[in-house]
Length: 77
Image (cartoon, rainbow, N blue to C red; front, top):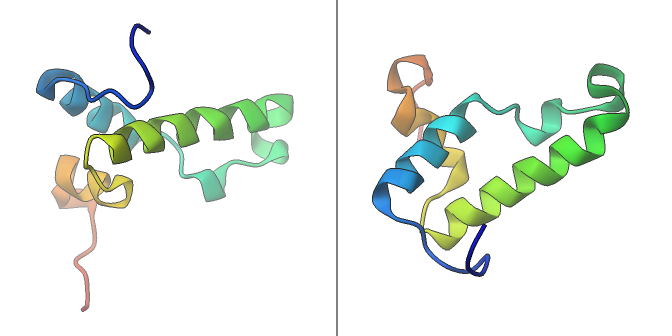
């Protein structure tokens, strides 16, 4: 990747990243039992994507609802 980790990405790339992130496992779901010796690397990848979303003013916890609203339970607050 060219540029610094703190650089913002263009809208098309950001949309693609949101879509990919919506299919990634949640960090709480990643463990050594299910992912073997790669579990730590998977957690690092998830964190890197989360950081990039945050740098681009996107709340990672809201991405799944934005990308797949039909599969997201409604909030109760």
